[in-house]
Image 1 (cartoon, helix red, strand yellow):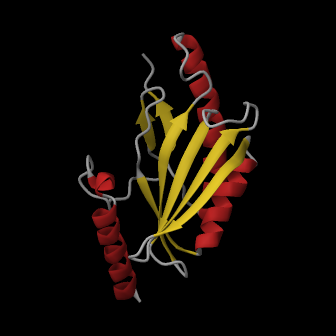
Image 2 (cartoon, helix red, strand yellow):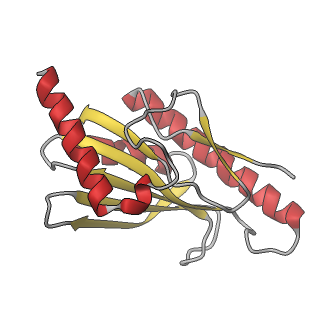
Image 3 (cartoon, one colour):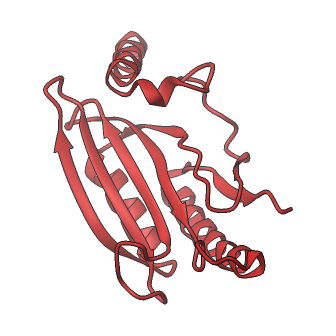
Length: 178
């Protein structure tokens, strides 16, 4: 059983590296899992894509856990796009927007991407693709910082719920304050 799991992980990692070369750039190892207590650091409005493996659960359970947790934490699911590739890898993109913000393509929120190597079992990885706070494009840095903090607070609450349900989640985001 362990050998099968290791082969699945190696196959998934190789497939991700071959099809998403940008995911491997800037990181020494795609398979290295950071400590669950660590957090991502981003400058205000700048995302750092980071893969976070979720192994041993169904694809639907993983997707449902993220959607329900984000919806319970002040977000709405604005878009869900599922795409399959010829090599058997699936990608589900979940676009969440703050419920308190007006709807639209530039509404504050975060986009998560779930990569799945096999649809029947989850050798999955979750990546944060974007993170844009309210007033992110304002010339006033105080407004930008306040909006980003509000989004981080809601995002952190959602990830805590995911961790409670699954035992793991994407790391939380901290901002680099000037």
